[in-house]
Amino acid sequence: MTNIKFDLPIFNPLNQGPVRIKQNVLPVEMELSAGEHFFTSAPIEIGTFFHYKVLAHISIPYSYDPDMHYVTIPGTEDASDKQIAVHTSLDQHTKITASHTLNSSGVVFGASNVWKDFIDNAPVVRQAHQTAIRQAIDTLVNRLLDAGLQGVIQTGRVPVVTPHNYKDYKAMFLPKKTDVEQPSLDDLLEVQTAIQSIYYGTITWTLNYCFANIIGSTHDPKPSGYGSWIVLWADKCNDGYNPTLCSSFNYSDGSTPFDCNTSDFIGGHVIPGKTAGTVAAGGTAYIFPICKAHNNNDNIYMSMRYNPTGVVLKNYNQ
Image 1: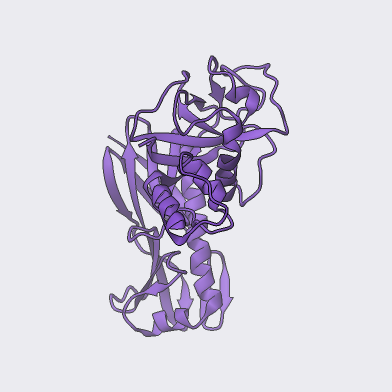
Image 2: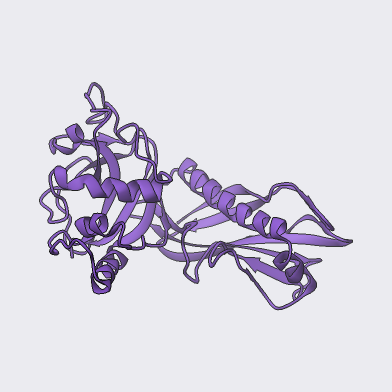
């Protein structure tokens, strides 16, 4: 068992009415033993509200996989009851508190009190709490990778199927389902259910991490059937934009040269390691943007160079 210790910045400077907030850092210590964990930092003073001290701490649900050396945290899209939360209080009073998560819609939790009421009615202060959580998640990912983790998974909300994107998501998750020009509501729900059972979130791999193609899978057609998967990757990992470089740009077997096509990318189904292989039903697969040259060569492995964040698919090919 190993513990990772680092400082996590909390809040940006803020002067809003009676609130004065300064940036501070929270000491974080995460235990790396197999299974689920819940870290809560000690409260620190971050500013004032009128003449009262404002204190803050953070709670982080996470799990650790010692075989893969991955940590899983709730991401910015996670809407479960296990989200990363920022908690603030006045003078450490146990009843004058507010707890803030990103979802649903950045709502502030806690019993009615002067501090929670102020946050509820001050959009700038409420937004500051949301920004603090988003920045904490981004920093957390970087700190964990810097500490030697091989990957950080962020759980998230599944894509929503609409008549506009139905064909794309049907091609991704139910390729054998009959095509229809105008999907019924039952069609939408069927594809939505399939995504719900497979999509898990995103993962950020460390630089130079080795990965290889998935082969011989029903959901892994060559290579024309990949068009829709790059849409999923772009939506979840790149703010809707297509990639400009292959994730293993000009690298194979961890070395150069390799001639990547710089304009023709697919959402490649890949697995960690140096050997292309199959994924058993119910296993885990990953989607990263790779060029067709890499996708068409199962005799090499790839090395993470660009676009280190990809999609995680659970219950794959089941």
